[in-house]
Length: 446
Image (tube, rainbow, N blue to C red; front, side, top):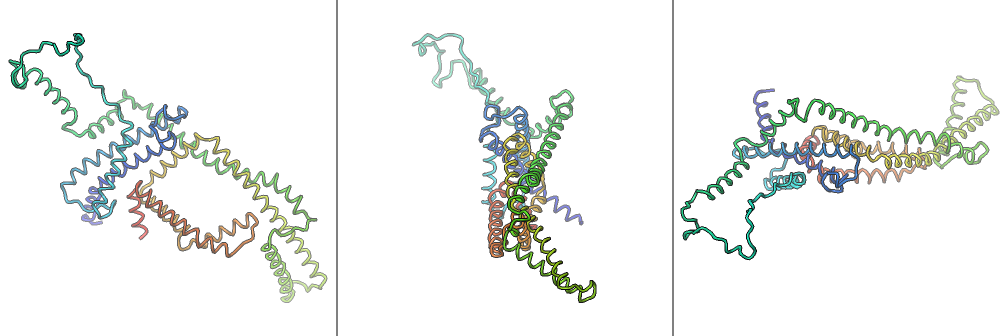
């Protein structure tokens, strides 16, 4: 790579710093709002607004504090770089369109949202301390207090501008003003304070607490993976257990026993069996003509065809019993899955936060790659073949007659609806959460 390309890429990366920082602060505020809406009914994350265990509350508070710190740091980065770049001729950022008014509207909307979320967690302002007179003024004589003589300008005789009370007031105002601004930006001071806390063994962020945080993160990951495996394994185990031990024996005994007249569950299975029997009969004739097997008499041939017919009848009775028992076994699996969700509220919370961190931790290229992979697989040019296989498998699983008209109608409508919903989600939500991912998606999709 040439040096000019490297310099150009670095320059572009630096010019994109304000938009990138604002985007990260906006995502942190969205994470806080999602925790509030999901577990605290849209209120501030605190013990008073939510009925959760101490472990869940501690985790939510730590997550909110982490996102608040991240949002503040990114806002400071946005303000400092934006003010510096305003004096330069910056190129168009790929995060937004070419319309500057649209870009300004998006920036203002994000800043308003971030301020609204962070305002809930700001410490209360200090009380206004005012001097209180220790001398009790008699009631009704408040206006009769003796005042020192004043001149025409309302000043005490002998008092000049800038002395006594005037000096005290100006000094207080100067102290307040000096408290508001400083020679060094607060973000830099906060960064040095954070580094000091991390390297200071006597601070609250000691090594033991860092180890405890690592253990909590490890336990959260372990609980999430175990719960996810339980959600998959227990319903599958329930399906196989109830089908093998309960539903299939009952259905075979009452409906698909060897003495029953029911062999085929639908017309498609019957035609499939007839074609298979016909092919078997032709195979016998073909083998006899080629000399690969001894020539069969009509009685022997009829006997072999009869044996094959009984074998096919047994196979298709078994398949019909499997299809009907699958319906009841799937219902049992759904009941068990719902029961697990109802008794595992805390595990669901931990799993949701784990998945949120996993998704938010992906890069913009990875997000765009997953979106393109999903769209090409289910709504892309080659998706109709996959949908045909899925529909045939579902109909076979439940013993339903296969309908080509229904398959073609489903393939012509459902992927289109799914594609429309996905595009609306990208336009409505993903464009607000991660505009850079949308830009990367558009670039990769072109």
